[in-house]
Image (cartoon, rainbow, N blue to C red; front, side, top):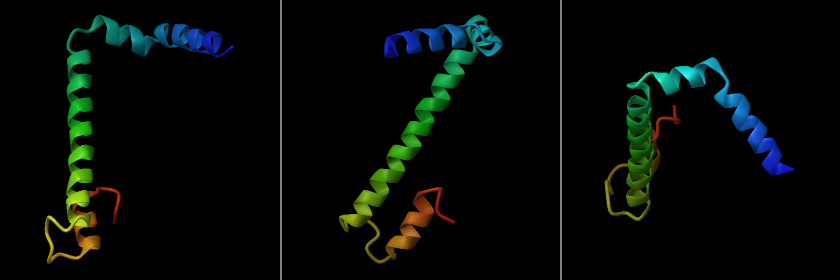
Amino acid sequence: MIDDALSEGSKWLAATPLSHTIQTTTWIIPSLQTIHILSVATVFSSAILVDLRIWRLLQRDVPFPEVARRTICCFP
């Protein structure tokens, strides 16, 4: 049942105009991969900075909310 749903969803997605554009334009896939890798690196480095602050190995004199605000984009 789940395999059928995944198969049908994959077939539908492959038939969309966006999918055809991605498949036929040579520069889109490397661009999307680059954006993805940079985004993952940004999230990972933010998590590492906050972890180092929690372990009191980095920025000991700065309050934790300030470190979190500067390193994590979701905080106001």
